[in-house]
View 1 (cartoon, helix red, strand yellow):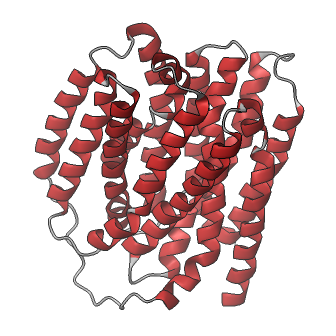
View 2 (view 1 turned 180 degrees about the horizontal axis):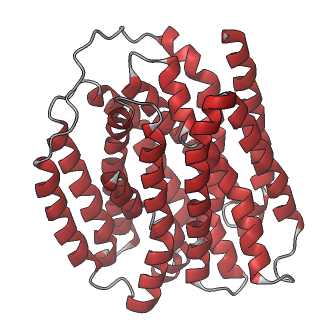
Length: 368
């Protein structure tokens, strides 16, 4: 849990820095968004590969020590990037390293009890929530100076500490051979997560930029993401336990319905004419329901592919997210410089999420 917190904290700092980076390197919003979406697409596409590795690697402590150190180190190195493309390279390495961690982390978390995945996700979302408000405050106050020193020290400590820890040994049990037919059971939840990632990716990158166009501070934009993720942290944990009672596919429909409803409200309001707290409340209400299924979809995938939990986790957390990033990339390539439109279209994209959730619900009923 502690590792997940630190790594997701380290990689949560890129999205809220949009206004800061675009001003520092004199680039437009679309260029910044496309760069982040491309990196996320690439890193998520590698997760199935890391899922296979996590189901077979023996020295888990050394593996996690390496990917943790690289994630922390290169996330902090953005403070010394002299050009935008060096910044992009550092973000890329950090994201790939973090991607390598997630399938194994989820497998270890669900090794004994599936409910533990909720706590695993809780730690990650908490780190993901804390990062934006910290990095925007740090950027405004210190211009990111000295950040690389902190990262260097923490990465060395993480490697030494984690390489000495003994994680769960790889299970000695027979595994079924993976076939394309096995992935059919994951298709509905795969598309649900893909569209969910698409909708979330739009708001998390363009939300801080939109706030900036309203004349609000960099820290306020980062705080919106932090508050959303704190609410999401609670909802993600609840989602696993509620899903156990009423079914994960039902939770997917509830989550998507809330996203559509609050997203539509957000698109209809003129936030230049209302207090900042109204923007904050609607923003959090619009985006946080997406986190309700953040853990439960991993449980759902592992239940449908029980003999290969690492692969199942990587398909849902990685490959599906990559599909969402690809949609983000294409969408922002066309509309990416219209910041208000990008944020306002969240409700429409959430209709796709609801459609996939409905398919998953019908599919689950047919399996039963």
